[in-house]
Every structure is written in C-alpha cells, then in structure tokens.
Amino acid sequence: MARFGASIALCALQCASTVSASSLFRPPPVRNAALLQTWEKELDGAGGKDTPVTRVVGLLKNMMGQLQKDMDQDEALYKELSCWCNNNNYEKKEAVKASMAKIEELE
Image (cartoon, rainbow, N blue to C red; front, side, top):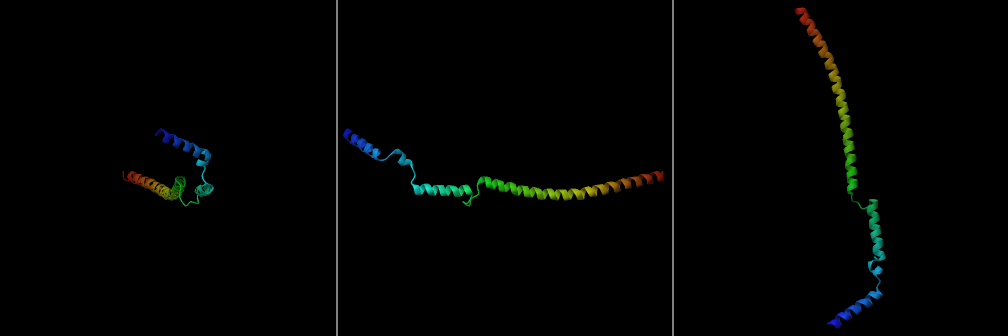
C-alpha cells in the first residue's frame, strides 16, 4: 500500500513539472476575447438591459416631468383662486359697507 501511494506521488510530481501553475489559471485566448467583448457590451449599455442606476435615473426624469406638470396646474389654479378671492373680498367689503349704511339709515 505504501508503494502504491509513493507511485501516485511520483506521477503527480512528473505531471506538475510539465504543467506550470500559471498556465492552469490562464484562460484560453478565445475565451478571454469573448469575455472582453461581453463585458464591453454591458459597459456600453448595448446589452439591451436596464441597469438599476438607469432605471432610477429614468424614474427621476419621469417624476421631474410629472412635478413640472403639477406645478403648472397649481400655478394656474392659484391665479384663478387669487383673482376670485380678490374679487370676492372687494365685493364683500362693499356689501358690508352698504349693509352698515342701511343699518345706520334704519336706526
């Protein structure tokens, strides 16, 4: 049994001497080129997928457009209501003056 273990160790040493450790971890050139091409596509955004960052930017742009639209509507409503309030305030003041004059007249 010891002799069998020694022969396995000797075989492993011979195999290790013919293949270097750096060549075991080096990807083949074709695979390396394919990985670089895929990585460049993803970095350029040509992969067709939205990244989380681009989705957030898109949502923020949509929100900005919606807020601008709401702001314009609010401004138009404010102008309409402020005009109504000013007119109504003027009319009510005149009505109060007229009523006070009528009260003075009746007393």
